[in-house]
Image (cartoon, rainbow, N blue to C red; front, side, top):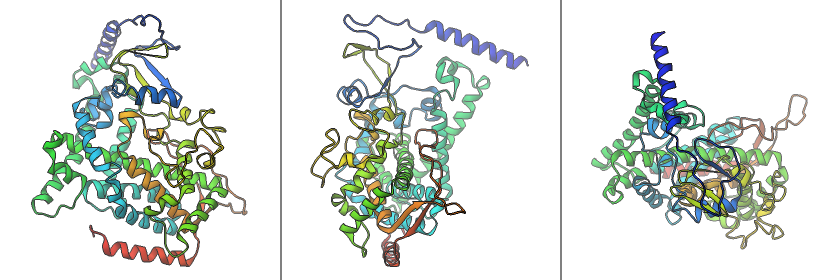
Length: 490
């Protein structure tokens, strides 16, 4: 009891000191004003239009590209190593330089064979057991990035190494969630000694595990490089050019490790929303099928080289990401200097929240915003969204779903290809429809019943999926066989 009372008194004392040290609100520069809203210990601005988000986070990216340093997730869990949580500093820029080198638009075509191999495996298993669609999408996402990042295969998706990284993802989402830890509201609690701060002991242990995981993956590639068995992969690229990027082993391990961490969750979440959209909008699924048939016929499945000829596929994906953004709340930026925007004063260290859910529902940009309308990207009457030629547009370049400015997702070129390929192949190979109950009545999946967290995805729902013909199944089996024979990691 005495210890508990001492802890409580310490917390109250530190909290009072923290509140006393908070700076008073400054008067805005002449001719400007604070935006409307309640007073708070720290300025938080929510951006709900695409124009304002682009004006601030892209056009003024030099002062809006940092991150607020949450003690629980950025410091205790990540030890200031996780790129997505780093402030705008030299370590972040060096890591970003490496990410760009391995994932930019010019190198992305080098990964097509990997994506197509794993897409065939996913498609075959999805047809065999559609009820496990969540698992197949997650395995595809993990398998592609695991090959690219570490030169390793994922066969089942249940491997221990995959489960460890899934656990790392879940820990990050939980710990970084607003309000999860009191220390994020009152950072002065970081001054408590460890024996009085159980949150420190808990989170530091989770850091130890993820650090061991990421460093273990790096050291494994380093050892394989010594005996000449390391395949080309991002981890090898880093180790061979480490001095060029000016990153320590720990920093490089987190750069590559968290590229897997990010890429393995977003693609699968988006594909689950795509399936939901197709189940709810069967006319659009038929249009996607008709387009893939017109390009590929029944005797070969779609490849990434076909994408330019598949604008309806691309429109269906882009509309899915607008209709159900994966990171609906967006990832917050932080300003590093005072700024005035259209008469509104934005002090340094203000947290800017790009609210993707609201941005993607601006009626001026997206008429009937709650409706799933891929035609808005294809029909010239939609003046705010249509672009030509359709051999190029719609695409996901500079699409707000991937973030803004200097903090845009570095893997967007790979993610875009993943989504197009999977959507096209599912439509080419299978029929999708609503599930039926025991009396033969169609079961309507919930319009919005999604998980919480960074990457929102629809909770499991039933639907029917069958291969369109035995001819198409034979094509898939032949592609599986050919992929297994040519797999460089077999």
